[in-house]
Image 1 (tube, rainbow, N blue to C red):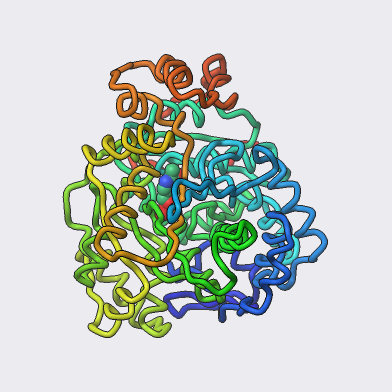
Image 2: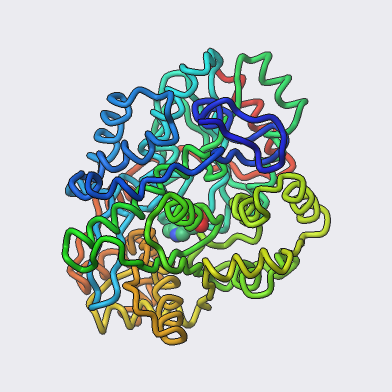
Amino acid sequence: MQFISTRGGIAAENAAKAITKGLSSDGGLFVPYTFPDVSGDFDNLLQMDYAERAAFIIGKFLEEYDKEGLLTACKKAYSQFEENDAAPVVKIDDNLFVLELFHGPTLAFKDIALTLLPYLLRTGANISGVKETILILVATSGDTGKAALEGFKNQEGVKICVFYPSEGVSDMQKLQMCTQEGDNVNVIGVKGNFDDCQTAVKKIFTSKECAAKLKDENVVLSSANSINFGRLVPQIVYYFSAYCDLVNAGEISLGDKIDFTVPTGNFGNILAGYYAKKMGLPVNKLVCASNSNNVLTEFFLSGTYDANREFFKTMSPSMDILISSNLERLVFELSGRDSAFTAERMADLKTYGKYSLAKDEKTALQKEFYAGYCDEEECMEQMSDSFNDSGYLCDPHTAVALKVANDYAAENNPQAKMVVLSTASPYKFSQNVLKAVGGKSVKDAFDAAKTLETLSAAPIPSQISELKNKEKRFSKVIDKADAATEVLRFAALK
Ligand SMILES: *Cc1c(COP(=O)(O)O)cnc(C)c1O
């Protein structure tokens, strides 16, 4: 399948090229030329396990990839998840379900894409005839960094460099990244927030000067952020999988529409749900849940995206984002795939920090989406309520989604079943979760985790407990202006 840029520049001939490049050279994002319709394939999908569903859905876009090879890669990726199930659905009450996406190697939903992306990228590079070393640049709000490092560590022909906001991630998230093993990895803190990291990385991608210098080192860049279509496509799968699991469990009948609530930051997760709907998944509403950085809530309500606002550091740091990259792909669809219009808006965003939708686009947006947000106090309350009322221990990001899902239900009295996406293990945010459910302030992340384990009877994942004794390998913190220099230095290391 052909891929086109949201800004109308040069198209990629196929998925292999789109994934290998990551970002279009015009600064736009690659999108598939069409969305394959799989609404007639449910009889098959219902019978499959998670890896088979993944290979089926992903294969619809990645036509030039070998089908058997893709299935083998999916099986290998998803065997790294607890109980061999990458996306179990947990019933909370008659109408409310939680889709748990955090049982992978690094305990966040990013693992679903990043356990598979190394294969998609390596194979894509081979198909495209790329011979250079691929340097993966990652801007992370906390979870992508670790998941990408784990996925790509010690991979032949690949290097990976992660930028994270030095004071903007949880203690456990920082430890996970700074203790990373592997001889092809680099982790750098940036003085600033996630948006600073993301902007710095995007600038390197589009810099001709950097590209020329990297060429001398025989290095090309790619991305493991959700701007890369290779990150998005595995995320489409769990929307289908959750639906199939609900049908198989007798909770819904095939054809019934359901709702999804998604804790949202860079808009990659919820965009995959929108793509699933375009492919024929019976979805009623997609509910976009934000924390106090509620730029998206306002956008969905008013039709104006305005990033000129105060940035808040919250206890759900993976959603502390004011410039949601993947929104560009949604705006592109809403405009009727008008790339000139999309390019103009993204230029406005860069220059003025804002842009607005036309009236009909706003109507189309509100037909598909509902949006709400959850502040810090409400997040604490929700973690406590979920634990006390349903015995469900959740992390702050999931709590944001549960709160907004409740608001949506109260306002709309929906008939459809609601699936809330749970994106991280509570143990990645042990201090705040403990404070909410146990009323205790404990400073040390490991002490908090121990107390939380006793209180909840949910065992501490080994990925957390083993962090305590790991060597800290990375401690560098830089100004964002120095990101390109760091990348060039790392690229030159043999
Ligand atoms: C990345 C992340 C999110 C936000 O997902 P987007 O795809 O950026 O919208 C939410 N929760 C957690 C725990 C995350 O790691």
